[in-house]
Length: 115
Image 1 (cartoon, rainbow, N blue to C red):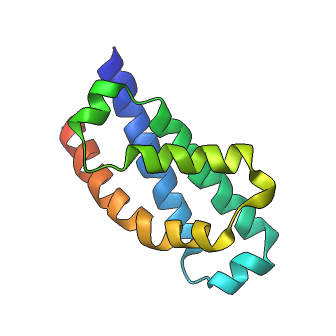
Image 2: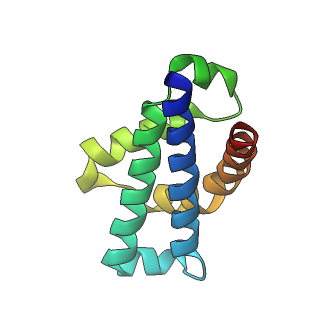
């Protein structure tokens, strides 16, 4: 049962990471500062990725050491608990630089577990 739940959480992480990249596509970091809807959308999506990651079982996390589990979950915790102090430079960096390799890794994992 845990494997099925973990597979769903990994698929969720992949889906929401892709959504964040899609929303940020063609946007600039200055737009993140200026557009509340962009800021809140990316905050939410990164938060959901972290929440899904936090629900992946420890054995599955250990099985996939290329996923930076503590960083992903830590980012979720920062957004949840210090929402009024979010560093938008870090959020932008996460979406632009951290999500593409995460998507690539999750895509390999999810593809291998589905077929």
